[in-house]
Length: 157
Figure 1: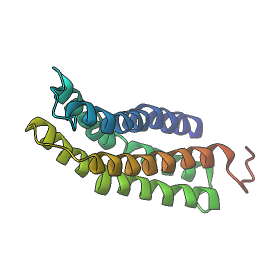
Figure 2: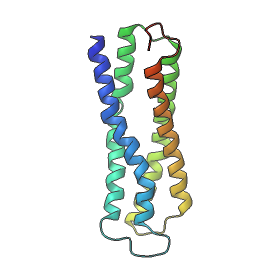
Figure 3: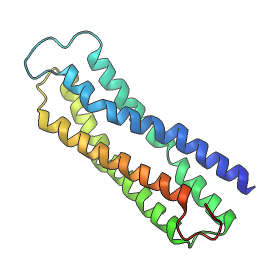
């Protein structure tokens, strides 16, 4: 059962978190292309691309809830719920989720509205979003490393 849970956990992480990290990273440059500061015509489809990237982030973020659920079930089956590496991973996962929910997705929604309504977009807005997205991605990368290395684990790496 442990191997099945671990496999599902890893697959959920790849399928759910991967698209969010990629789409969220692509979002700020897509907004800059869709709403150029010089007032030039952004071209057809750029607003649609921005909306699509935001939708990918929203949908896969919802699906991403499976990752910690399956992770906790796996940890319970492995008997490692109290291990420091797992506790750190859980805390970092919570911070990453909070970053996505409170900082990334709402700012994406604001920028989607600005691009759709052809309002000007400040470069500072996309730069700030890129920073929050980078923090989100860095948190997930750290969790991934902790899951692989498991420092202090008696199960070995």
